[in-house]
Image 1 (spheres, rainbow, N blue to C red):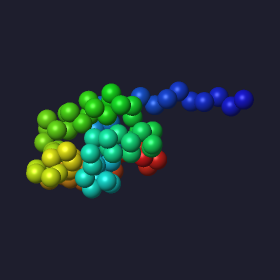
Image 2 (cartoon, one colour):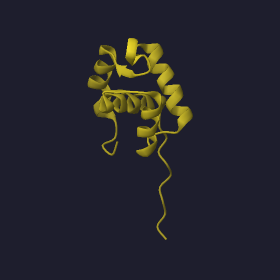
Image 3 (cartoon, one colour):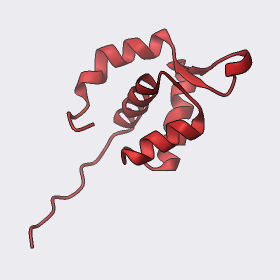
Image 4 (cartoon, one colour):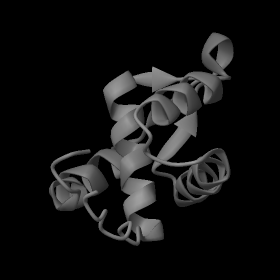
Amino acid sequence: MPIKPAPRNISETEYMLRLLRCVDALDCATELSLWTFAAELELMDYVTMRLSLHKLLSAGEVQYGAGALKNHIYLTEKGREALQLFGERLPTEI
């Protein structure tokens, strides 16, 4: 039986970048669709997703839409800049 390597320790910053990448891939998403997408790809657990989303909202890197899109989350210009600067640092399997 092969020995599995220990799971890699993932930083808070990497989780936030993963979530930014998810929002970017979905263009705009509800919290449910964002969670479903992250869970299907096994990128993070629910609590980590909620904490990361809260931090991204507080930092102004994602925000909720207005009017009919008030329940949808989308990237801000600040979030796009963060992805442009740091997105390449994510492991290639993500």
